Length: 310
View 1 (cartoon, rainbow, N blue to C red):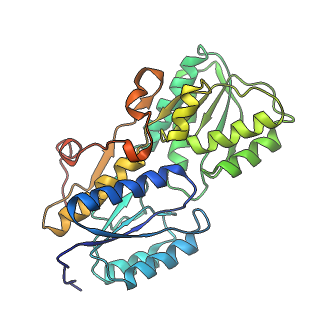
View 2: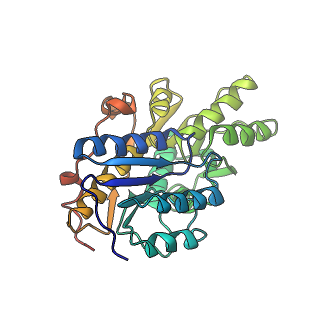
């Protein structure tokens, strides 16, 4: 079914939670480009973080509002299919940010290679501790498409490149501060001192720090991801040695611009994969600002390197 396009494009943006600062950045990026390009946007966010059923209901709600395009950060790789069918049956173009479904009906995906990102994070921690010692891993949400490849990247890099770095503990914090705090608060009474922590995002690193403070122990050096403003503060304070630039603000910006360009008749790349850059004290300056003051990679800089088009 072909939709009639409005003069002012209307986007529906469906993210995964209100708590993770990375999604605050993603929504801000969408809002900024919509103002710049003259589009309207409605945000749909589950009240319960990463709740699959709630996101499915929000997708149906968004479809009922008949937007010109949808930008979606899927909560699960396979369980959204009936809701995705509703989008397709309504003839609404869709773009993904952060993660994808399998199969993917999206016109374009904007994200990063989570496996390479995980490898880069693990390599950085192993190098920091001199290639020898013990580390703990904290993985993301069990349903998040980003979690498994990121965790596999951690383990593969250590196994292949750093045989004298041993994983002595692994848990998950669901990409949330409170869940990470609970997981580490339960583990710390029996967890020996470790040389480093590889944590799948900055928000969980805050929860780990909370747990260590409560028992009066110093947290080991950490590597995180997302380069949130909170993560930047941890780097400045010396608690985190680096954060991988899984840049949700840029993902939201590029996906919203891509949706508007698609509505104007442009062809889109099937994928826009942002580089797995590590941010530390040496290159922190450009990230050391709130989301409202950060700049995003431009469409012109992001897209010329992409050769596969819809």
